[in-house]
Image (spheres, helix red, strand yellow):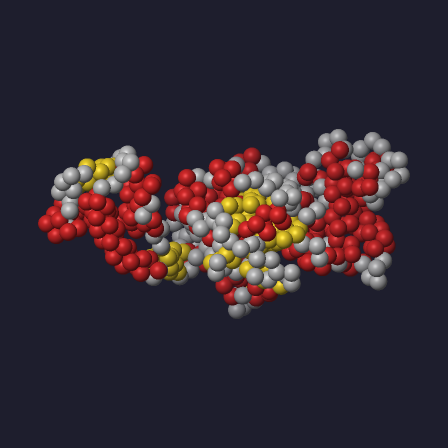
Length: 591
């Protein structure tokens, strides 16, 4: 496996964010007159980066990003064919001072946090092979950390998108895949608008406690617990009576309705093309309304077709046409005369036209500077909205769903959120006169700022399956064991981490080979987290044995109970867990 260093700071200009990270490209290039050019050619003519090569991007000796090559090295011209026209132009503009790109690869790059940045002692002005084993180990650890984090972020973002679109989401999958923890992570993102990550001490945060409610369903849970019902009370004389009380979900919905509105500040910035286009529209208006004072009386006529983006000028001796507007803007912005001649279909530009174009550029430069100053100051937009409230139902299928939700089947439907979904509850007529200010006096509804997340193991044979009426009201996301394997990275010691992942992988592969089983029967990483309780003084084998005997064996036996030849199947799973193949060799050494 190769490790390559790329420098991102060229001629005192950093291209880390603008090129490397923005477009996920790693490359090295020089101008012909660069003192290192010939030396670089010699160093690179036998260098070939293959897909999978590990990469660091640095400024000087400070490593700012790590990554992995997604392609073999090719020329920049071939690589940027994958990008759209706008991105191609942007990349070429940034690299206009480079004559020769020597090595270029498409790569998945991760920008390091400040605490993870490190110095690479063998500084190279452009690039070099990395041979130092300590640096290689550090790169491996950072890639493992950031690639896992990115996968988890993508998973969370996908779940949040599903939740926002559907209001109701169920996380289903194999036991031990961290569905409950993921539900709380999603809730934190929804409540704090992606600004705060979930951690255990967040449970003490007043906002989180107010806007997130967690309940766990079980066979005894019913409508009176969830929506509303009669509860015994004792009066001052000691007499026992009954009083209507809101259930946990109805109380939560009242909080959501009465939550204060919050002001969301959004920031808007225009891109360069939009700014120039605004200037162009303004310029055309000025020419048409005051032609005597525009661009030193050089424009006799101007036409603009905004739909087709065609612009025509007449300066008395020349009739110039630009299509699209961007052709004109490119000339004004970059003064690319060759491109201009091609765009307007001219081989030469006479002196009058040249003066005219310079005047245009001068005008646009003045206006653009003003617009640019405006663009550097954030334009704020205030929006007002209700705070998000997230209700988490753990083990949602362990309760009798129809009995718990009752008529709320209608009210939780995505299309009937808010007052349009108001329903009369079973105890609605018992709302007393002194409760006339009750928001649900005329019927209960689920506010539009309330989101529901359920978690469940779909294979749990101790409970009934969720009926179709309820299933169609939720979006479903399967959380697979491999999705959350990276939760082991920051918990288990490095001495057993890789083997734990390997055992988990082999065990799940063996499980899936059993007839009638699929990924829903896999063993999640949460089970392997228990290794931290057993691993002491390098007792690796004992730790894995105790995990099997105390946690995995019983669950797998329950899977297999009632199957013919269950004992032999359990032995096969144990062999897979112990990385033993049928012929007695270590399974991962056979491959």
